[in-house]
Amino acid sequence: MRTVGAPRWRLIADTILRDVEAARFVDRLPPESDLALRFKVNRHTIRQALTYLRDLGILGRRAGAGTHVHRDLVVIPVTRDISFSQLCTSGEKRVEVLSMRTEDASSEFAALVAGSFAAEQPLHIARVREWVEDLPLAITDHIFTAGFRAAFEAYGSLSSVRRAFAATCDQPLKRVSTTLASRPAALEEARLLDVEIGHQLLISIGVNRCGPTVAEISLSRLKAERVVFTFDNEEPQGASIAYRAD
Image (tube, rainbow, N blue to C red; front, side, top):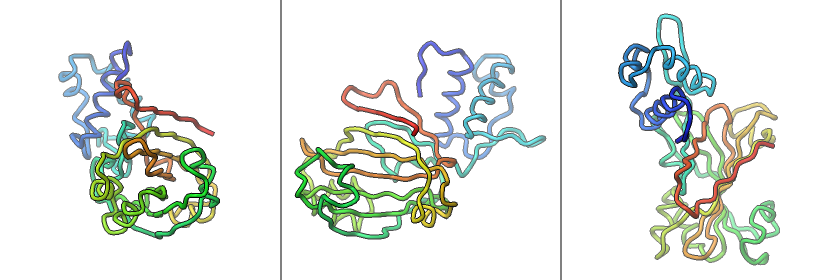
């Protein structure tokens, strides 16, 4: 996250956030005095930066224990390429395949994929649950379009969209857009994520192309309190990033 023209404390906060993303700070931050020396500012400026990150839920503070990183928080940089295998800065992660099925385009996903390809084409759908540190983080439907059945079948054994396309497609998979939304959890989502019905979820819809063709759409439902999205304003031209909170 880069913020042009921002106050000094905000630039320091962004640097600390990148350190968290890179797992340079896994458990605890250095004392405020050490951070002040590092950034060549007074401790008041450091406190402003740390307060901002605590308000985001990234850091916490306990009396006598200093400032710590929330270990169950996942920081997700929104760039051209987002994959579950890369979004976690630390901790055990795994993908659990829940189902693999083929449906026609009149399925529940018809509105999501409308305009991406011919309505009569079948959709190949892999539903997975994604875990970090033995806690469910997200449910994702990976929706493969008709011409990429081989990638869908490869995903069943590889549990990675990018590896599945690398194994079956001559051209690289490219992220076209990422849309973020928010809504309450429905019954099945609540059961799979171990939350109450109505618990607030973050919704991420990623559209990927292989060559000129829409090849895969990822629909993820994530626990809102466990993720922070950061947007890179220097993302190359052509990466369309949209977000909204409904």
